[in-house]
Length: 307
Image (cartoon, rainbow, N blue to C red):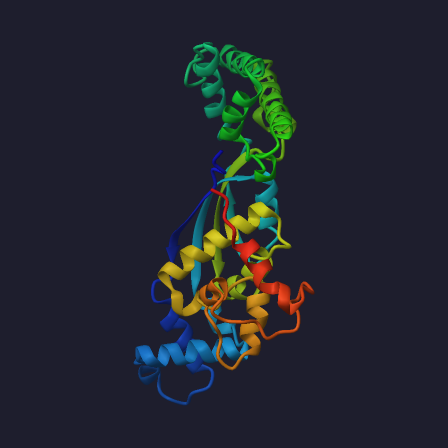
């Protein structure tokens, strides 16, 4: 079963590495502005590494990144917005049914209810059709219920190997979706009907964040095994997007063990080398108190991606 969460980097400061280097140099150099701006690629690398080693990350605040995270649950989005040094715009369940209508239409197709694709004309009748289609889907064979359920709700991967638990989850979220449409069919507003929905209901969010928050706070916390699986999945997906465009800035980034290791070394090491086992950790334990000998295995677990 697909997790159904996508992370896309949709906008960023294109020349961010150079901006970071110039800003860093500005704080220490007496050179005139034009000379500061005429910085070579080699100097960019030197200044980025120096700021990283010294943990002088204020210049990194000049680099901004905007992500579209699609299909995540309300559970994960609530964790995401706790990072206060970022800007967010989220899909509102007050004004849209979001993924729920797609669930209802899948249930309609599955059960032969032939519900209209859009609530037009007498909307209450259409909503009643959606509610009935979902209720009928609850009468289908147990494992078939998981497919429509996962359209509008995020299925916890840990349940995939436990049919009894997955079926219980699917039945629960389908009932919440049916109750949602039943309330709409009886005249409730979306902003009130949504109160019956499960926390795993899918949403969409745009996130804009600077490189300092990413490198010092978000990635160390959320790429770690101590983070909840869904936001950890999102954090690793963000990191993979970041290293595609700006490896100079993000190749040394990672969960708290990697961040602590790299900021204590004379020469930081790329996260990929730790993952491949080509480099060993020197810190006695990570900030989460995982002992040195266990850190590599813990990192491999953290990097596991759900598909």
